[in-house]
Length: 220
Length: 220
DNA sequence: CGATGTCCGAATGTCAACATTAGGACATGA
DNA sequence: TCATGTCCTAATGTTGACATTCGGACATCG
Image: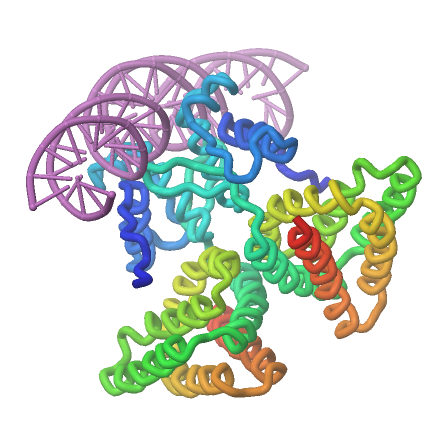
């Protein structure tokens, strides 16, 4: 057997999850202050646990905090988007190439299955499409087998999710049109493609998302 | 004027600095447990501050902690080295290319100055050479102007320092022979070179360090 | 003798009270 | 009117006491 250790979680991680969800669903919009006392009261935990949870979210880049000035949700400026997607392009490129070299057949099958689920999801209007999008990339990173690379991905993952949420809100049509195809291409290239082609495709996949998002931001 | 904000620091960061130094100077060798009560007593701070400091070190990848099982210094296995340097190669590549596109003349001059200081340092036996090596790359990342990229670098920076320390301990001669030249090449390519050549050189610079370190580990 | 169950100590996880700080409101003076 | 100095308050930073958990030592049972 090869099960992942049944990790018990503390209140800090629990708090981080709740706050993250609240950020995603718009309860705390970009720039909003996250006050420790308020959160501790609402979540019914001590300030210490909330504090530790906020530190976790800062590690994910979702919030920003400064000495004696508290924690706030990050902004979504053109610069932020540019920074995150530029780094992500480099990480995705490495993850894809490494996955191609090391992925097991089970891991390759998992990629195909996510793409298949995407297809089914599109018929239903696609409310969970973004989650599948992220899950696909999670699977690629997992297949790379490099825990430091996975950590680096987790440091931008939530920001990508937050940014993509805003993109889909407006231009859902364009997103639906491209997602499935692009991910299917990636899965096939990882299974058996040219290393250089895969590297360029993985980068381009991210850069096209970046351009779409920047265009959306400029339009407001 | 364009001064960086005069950031006041808390006890957590102060504690993290002390513990980090203790790890580098061998007080806490790889695998050693870092007990909160002991550290709190030695540093004359509360356990809460130590705890927060340890969380910062975990963000740097220098220590690892698990639920109710405490914090320990990371190991230095071949796999760890491989993971860190593989990620670093991808980050360095992006940093170098971005720095080439955006670096100001002041930032380019800073690179040259560090290389010059390296040359002077070699004559004196080179005890601070590793610090200069890291400082050079800090400067490249700073010149990239991408704060997310800098964060990603900081998540592996301390590990690189720890690993290189062990390499230099043994094969100092080989290190001295190559450092200056390689960094001078990088600086020149960033100033005015071909983008593709720079990208490959930056990656190769890291991979050669990786190979040297792995060879050193295998020899024991 | 091996497998399972039960305790115990040492460490971390959690909490609420206290100390310190940032930044604005207000008053003062040139 | 603007610059400067001084409070004041709401938030974060820090602390020590209390609760919980892990993992090993030992006893027990088949």
